[in-house]
Length: 185
Image 1: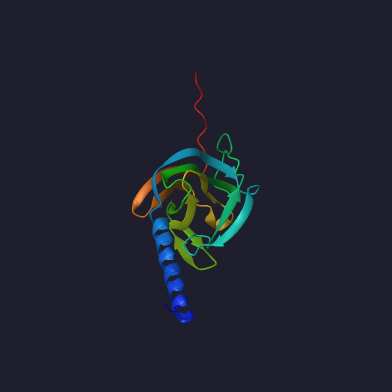
Image 2: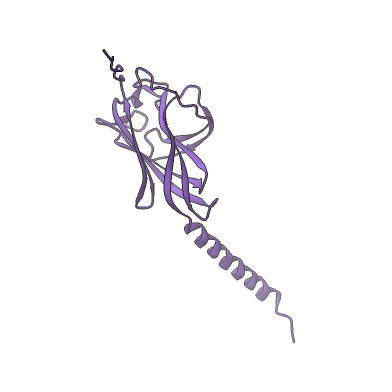
């Protein structure tokens, strides 16, 4: 029996690699989050948050997203949350299969009227949208930091976390002067 020519072996090897890549891709697409548990939500000092990475995000109001490390939430909202240097967000854990697999999610910040007008691109945003990946079973952070004066929009901001067409989490934050605590008489 004759050995296959070298070119045939190369073609078979490439075909095998393509099949394995397609199977791996299909497995990655199977990662499904069943639900998200809210671990924490609140305000943080955006000026002291450690930026681990910055990623371009054309559908985000600021044109980028910062990945933060070690976000320390304040025990109480500050008296005035409508100012540069304040951030707010959610920490959550995803549950699904297969555990540890990467799943793509989308965070959607609903911005109150009149929206954020970004002077760098002359676009007004009523939503700031970013796709991101998380490992199923891990804790993940999504927040919004008021880094520029033009981002400070008082009102109710709402974050939604989606996988495909399924909304998995929704949480709202009031940006502006916080009401004084009721005094018991």
